[in-house]
Amino acid sequence: MSVEVSFILPCLNEAATVERCIRAAQRCIERHGLAAEIIVADNGSHDGSQAIAARAGARVVSVRERGYGNALIGGFEAARGRWLIMGDADESYDFAEAMPMVEALRAGADLVMGSRFKGRIEPGAMPFLHRWLGNPMLSLIGRLLFRAPVSDFHCGMRGLSQEAFRKLGLRTGGMEIASEMVVKAATRKMRIAEVPITLHRDGRGRPPHLRTWRDGWRHLRFMVVLSPRFALLLPGLVLMGIGALALTSLAGGQREWRGVAFDVHTMVVASLLVIVGYQAVTTAIAARIFAVSEEIGPPAPWMQRAFDIFTLERGLLAGVLLATLGLAGIALPAWRWAEADFPPLDPVLTLRPVILGATLIAVGIQTLLMSIVYSMLGILRRRGG
Image 1 (tube, rainbow, N blue to C red):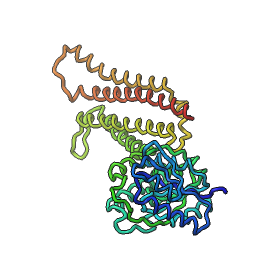
Image 2: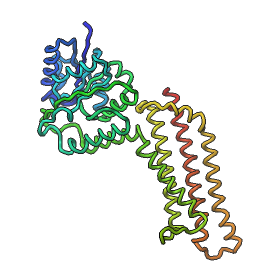
Image 3: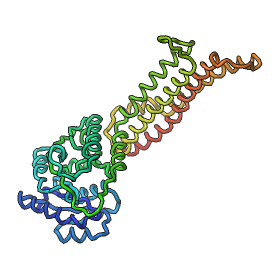
């Protein structure tokens, strides 16, 4: 008999709850007449969870690579069903609520997200910071950056099709897989549905595996790497623009605005803005190339065209030219100073070309170094593609 639905339960030391979760999935299967299987993807339990799961009727799959994401991927790969329903093995989710997800998948959805915020959160089921700050904020950032129609980015109960799983090419081995799944589905224009669910207090007698600040930061970091446009690129361009405008405005002499004089001190700050902004822009590009190379981010058709135009040799040449211009800008006042037999310097007069030259040198060297990095990432991308 072919299997329509596979229930996937990632497990690490869940002896107290895994059997009850399996029983709940079995009730769902019997109530709705599903052709289904239950898979416990064990991630190295040492409390007897494997034996308990096997006695309860689940198929136990051992996943050696540690991490929540690795456990899920191992369970998905072992599944035989057309539809994959995932949920934690700690009783925080009731698999009796899985049928609306199955129905949404049957109706054509590629990914079905459970929403605790559209459903119900039992008292004490979610820590205060998670409920009112962490999850809503990270979900909002995800919606803004990736246009994902999801109210609860990190709900642990969700469903997807086998075909969607293969297309997503999930890579992350930790908690970030929750974000990766949604981001990739959204950027690949897959059909995403959402159903309300209930979050229950877990039945563990120990602290959860989730670590609030560590895992929250990992989710945020993951989304920033996948979409560096708003976190790095745009802020960098703004800093560069403000700095370049101030530098060019003050290159010819002091400026006054509403009775306030701006001079070489402002130029130093403007130079810093240009350098920091340029570093943010080049880092954003590197992060984007890396995300595409490792297939953890959405594809970028423009990247091949960019590699065809901005070759390593052209990047090195641009970096050398910028640095040479900067050296020339510094050499001219130095030569005049030497000709005058090294008299005391007036910073107001001599610092302008030095600041401009130092800025060009810094930007030129950054261009040279990042051209090498881009070339290395480009080799990795072509090898992976």
